[in-house]
Length: 500
Image (tube, rainbow, N blue to C red; front, side, top):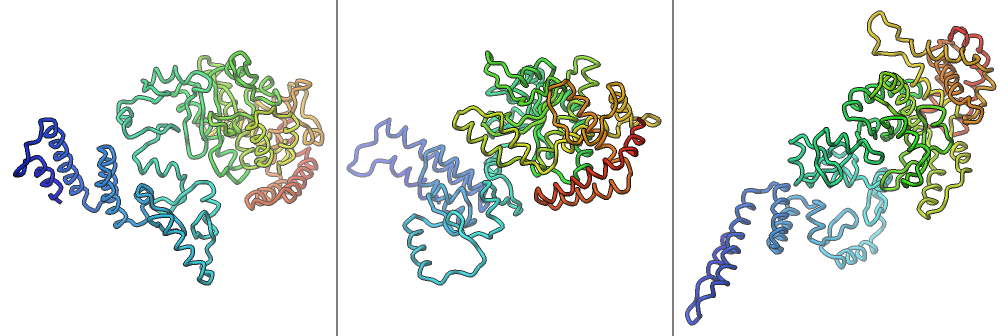
């Protein structure tokens, strides 16, 4: 493909009868020849590698060499007819799983197909494509198949193909990737050292957003505290919660861990002057170091449905209580994620979009939609918080210290209330009894999980099986009712288990 290069050189020489080109014309033509030569060099080096050819196309686009870029695109789709980006760049139209050079060709194809008998291929129409019925739920979520055939987020797949990478939950462009090698952190539109990033992320709504496959940790704590202390407890609590439910959330849950009680109370109750809305709908933050929010939103207006806690690493007491707080927060978010109130949240989302006030009655609807009662969901979270078996205790230590301490709290504050009253109770800040009530619900869960009462274990397993099979509310309610009744029958055994 030296033709273009020689053509450029011919233009720079005067033919018979013509005057020589001006100095300006020569200055313009020389760079063009150089660019053409550079294009041929890049194209030759790319060979038949589709990804490298795509880079050549992007170079052509930057150099405004549109015709050459289109020739590269045509080469790409010869090698990979379904290359999404190349077909799109050529202006091709996708229909019925095929690419057409124009809408006119699509219309001709539709007309042709209309005259044929309906295909009995087992496929269904989805936005101009014929796809297997099983693919539709994934496509509706904006997912695509990656190179291995696995379903992945469409936007994430495209960004990765274009050379973007993740730093925590933030995308980093190819042009900025060198900052990662320098150990810098993306904070807004700046790249900062870890020390500076810790200061930046110490503010509400500027928190670190640290992802794991199981949960996303939003925190204003220093990163070392998050990774070495908070994450350690969240990982252990996840195992406890998985043991209780025998099912796990289908996507990562969100846990917000703030750096001290001042931030915690501000975020929970809001600050009108600072423009911070309250996210604690029931006021439970005033009674406990962790709560669940039904109304907390991210910056894009999506519901986070997080468990919220604080870990004050500046004091010995703060490090001690932080263990329990973050475990509780994860437990609350986990329980909601496997038993979501989808319809209620959809209604609230529409109310927010229309900038109307949310009626507090939505909480009743939120809880009515649940398949599991409050005592079970709160009991599971409190088990993870206070009744866990501590796997970090060294040899000879008491791995049940948290349970012993929690039971002593119940005894010191008046003892365990009758189980019928306990299982029917609703969490509220009225009466100042909420923290003790949560603790008692945790004890009930500890008996169910670790008490080794044969009939209770049988009913509990039936409930777990119903959850694993994703049974409807009626069947789950029947299983939970059977479990509750059996626990009440064995109140004596529960008290013996607790030592009270």
